[in-house]
Image (cartoon, rainbow, N blue to C red; front, side):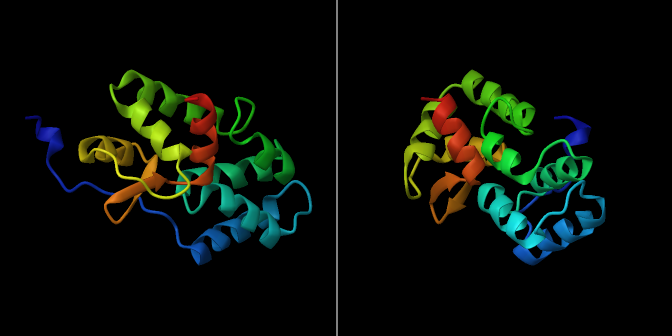
Length: 153
């Protein structure tokens, strides 16, 4: 056992919608173009939920003028989107770990939460790719559903 494994694990949970909107509002002065922030937030939140890293990345790229809302949403689950490195890193991990690709394929193809092996579910949950709904699981966000549904097809 490593002495560095001592401590309490910290779980980064989804940001609640009011906090997400506050984050979006804080980026408003830096946005490169005039954006209907509430509409943009609603669309972005529909794709990535309250995932702190993905939300911050979206508003960062919007503020830098690297992308507009329409392009961000359209390209997000593709190899051209702002999340490509994040998604690709997870794809490699999933494909290199026995059993994860098959389980994730089942999860992203389902229209409602599904049951998978508890250890496999824990691994996918630890990667931040799924969430638990009771004893069943579903993709953590629509972005992951779309990306992995296509890539694991």
